[in-house]
Image 1 (cartoon, helix red, strand yellow):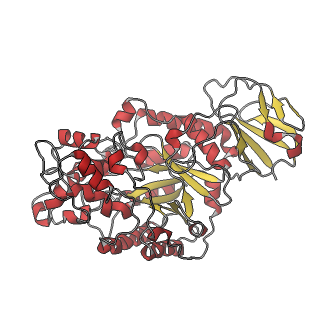
Image 2: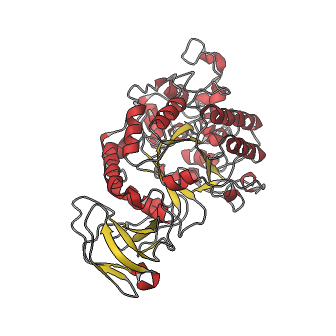
Amino acid sequence: MFSRRDSIAAGAAALLAGSASPSAASEAGESMASHPVPDWFRDAKFGLWAHWGPQCVPEMGDWYGRLMYVPGFAACDHHARTYGHPSRTGFLDIIGHWKPDEWQPEYLLRRYKQAGAKYFVAMACHHDNFDLFDSAHHPWNSASVGPKRDFVGTWAKVARDAGLRFGVSNHSSHAWHWWQTAYGYDAEGPMQGRRYDAYWLRKQHGRGTWWDGLDPQDLYTGPSFVPPDGLNSNKAMADWHGARDGQWLEDAPQNPGFVRKWLLRQKDLVEKYRPDLLYFDDYGVPFGPTGLEAVTHFQSLTPEGVLTAKQLNDDQRRYVVEDVERGFLADTRPSAWQTDTCIGNWHYDRPLYEKGGYKSAKQVIQRLADVVSKNGCLLLSIPVRGDGSIDDKEERVLDGLAAWFQVNGEAIYGTRPWRRFGEGPTKPPLGVMAEAEAKPFTSEDIRFTSRGGTLYALLLDWPLSDITIRSLGQAEGEVHRLTLLGGPELKFSQDRQALKLSALPPGDGRFVPVLKVEGNGLAA
């Protein structure tokens, strides 16, 4: 299924149906040498991500580039109203509109660090196939056209100056099929049958324009699944795409030239900016042996680097860190892993902002506690507006994170899983893309971390009554001292079945209290 399916508008079922399978190439299981996860990543626990590119310009949420060419989606309606029909005004014109005049990377990185981030990830290229760096092998890049800024290069310098590890995300392997909607047409209405811009635009059409000298087919990747003439309903068009380019494809036999160029671009990205973390938006490693060459190249240049991808098999987990997008695990995993999520939609979404749809700082920390207790890290996106700024509600989320980490950071950074991840009644839905189905955590949901002989118990909601921690009976060790981080030492009792204590002082707006537990035999 679409990797960002939770952010797509209702009514997408026909377009998205049946697209969840990784390709055979991504499951080939070719054996590679193990690549240990470096301590910096295992210690960092929390990163922030700028999932930012030209699709943020319309401020209409995720996958704008693809969905602006699919009638029936909000992106398509917005585009026609705001910019014109996509047969004449296409996505490349959105790139021309991109003016990030309010982008202040030094300010943003200072805020991200204050908010608790130990690593920062910048998007290098989304499925829209527009490189956000000074690309040597792809002329459609932000340093050469549109904003004429090397965003990745600037992010890298500013992040490292701030003392953060720096990562990049590369989503471009899916561009070749993701863009095929741009070769379609309206199947209904007054513009019925008129092909969208990718179908007919060529290099000569750019003479005298801002993209003079560029070939639009290099941006839109060329036709692989062109809808046939004669489809006469939006449903028929959506079904046609869903059965072909709507699949989450990890190989490209229809477009081998794209694959060869993808590898050149990927190597160029790594060689120029030497990221500490490389995020592939792929199920396994894309493009079979070509993808494995990219993995080997990155790991040879960055021995302490971290490469993440999704839905890995056992062999792949030896050299790639598994990323569980917007998802949960049931229990502690022996190898380090990562969850990535966003406080809203991946690309900036003005309607979501207006209706107050962001995750709160409390919800972020609850997720962080669950992830860290199970040996994971959390990568969180704070959507950036097209102009390069973040909004007032995002600022408040960052403020809430900063306040929590200032008091409780010792229970997160540098910790390792305890003998069990936690306890409590709430069972999160498992697997990728599951968070929309999650129920709220309660004060009975507790997560554990350990560091340096000390155990931490993170209560996922502020308790309003007496507390019983069944995982801390005397059989697990003898508790000598119990302290509320940022607060007083607490009175407690312990028997063979549980540790018990009275209700905490009122939270007064605080959330996810942390108990520091000291004693004998607890943190082994």
